[in-house]
Image (cartoon, rainbow, N blue to C red; front, top):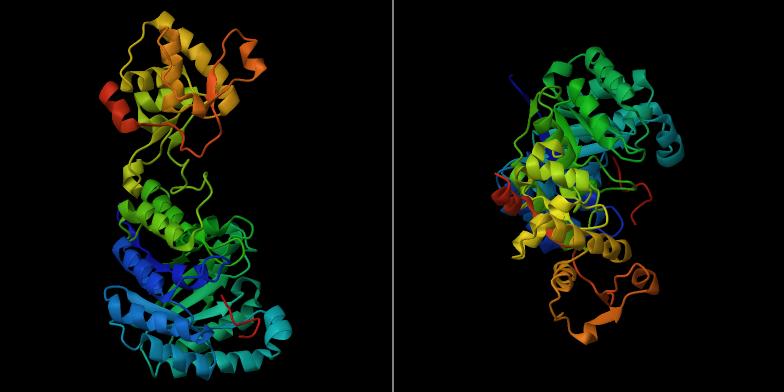
Length: 441
């Protein structure tokens, strides 16, 4: 099957950084830009130069130092914005100016206080001015999916005639559904006079949790550039997550026959670097990069994964750069995972002895949630009537509720520890001022 190419427009450094708590220093932006380059992003939107002198400086530094991808920056359809953008991306090997204006009646009336004709004139003039700095111009119609369709088509026709080569139609507030987005892009592409001369781009926000689904729908309707961010960061509920889009294409080639330039094995490292630089982690159940994305605690799942990872994993952890799957020992774990971990710790049990350890393990897991190696070793020693070697300073007597079962444990006082992790690698060895509306799109 031949896969059509979809360009990855990464806006982690622009839209992503606008999210509260995600601002980056100039040198941090450069560090992340280099990682995005290694990841394989086709276009890196490095910032919004008019927002601050530091942002303009950061964009210029990224433009000078990162040479392979297109380096883009954002500018409103205003002369001062575009001139600052032009200065910022001037050193780039492949510069792009991304200019925008809101096209919905709501935004024009309430925010910009302009008429439709003024909006059309500003859009065309903005593209023409940007062309004085680079031939690669992207135009975005902010709040496109809530804009009057006929007026939006006039805008798109006008900016294409003025020299825009990429047309971005954002679902700025995450209001649309996949069927609407698909119909929207299909209608625009069939209606606009010179649609075959430009690349259509999609930029979806996640206010209803549909950003990735909407992005995929737009691609199926003809969009060939997707705007996304690492970890899905961005304004409000965030943007479409780069890692989810890319891996959807890779895993579901039968339904989504599209290719990207992303080196998927660098996804996890990129996610981790972003979290390190911003101090903002991702939720444990986050697709692809969350700490639980390849973790298994339920006994049925653990048993299946130990026998064949495909039973519960639709991609390998290594395909996205995660070192290995992990089995977490907790109250839902089964004998299979417990036996494996005991063997890894150097203990081999007959079935009856394993049953004894397992019963005690379940009781303890009910109390402390995650059973770590030192807990498990204590259970094993107790079963074999060995002397515990846990220092008294680090233990406390188990609650009476546990003692009532006939088994009492010395449970460590609460401390910060990582859960026990059992890797599938080991398993396989055993089991072959700015104005309020400054920020846009």
